[in-house]
Structures are given as structure tokens and as C-alpha cells.
Image (cartoon, rainbow, N blue to C red; front, side, top):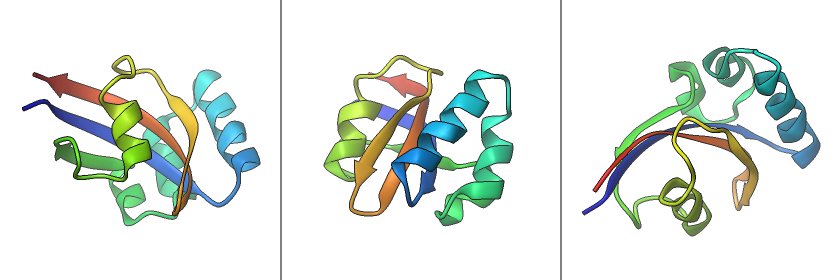
Length: 93
């Protein structure tokens, strides 16, 4: 089974998500932005979600986490929870 680990930042609006993505691309620290802005409890851990397999997260997450390049910020990804920036930190087959 494929296992991945990822981190994310969850916010209420696509506009805020895009703004944070721009800040990261300009060199801001993903983990610090997660602590400051994420609506998910994982924000306190820098957005880290730990390891998980397919089907353990919402489908929108799975699609990105199991296909996107490692260490490249993806998003905004919309789910029923809001808008996410997602970064796959590792993936193993």
C-alpha cells in the first residue's frame, strides 16, 4: 500500500489561500504560516498530518496527495472544510 505524509493549511477563503501560497513562494515558512493561519488543529504542528494511506482523508486530498510532486505546495484545494494548501512531504509505495 502507498503511504504518504503531508502538511496543510486550512482557511475559509480561496483568496486567503492564494495569498498564503504567494507568501510561501516568496520564502515564508510553511509551518509558521500554518501556526498563524490554519483553522485545523494540525496548524499547531506546522500543519503536519502525519502518515496516511489512500481513503483515510477526503477524496479531494487523496487525489492531490497521491499524485502531486513531493515538497511542492499545491492548492487551493477545496473540501467541505474550506480551502487547503497541501504539501506532500513524503510518499512510499
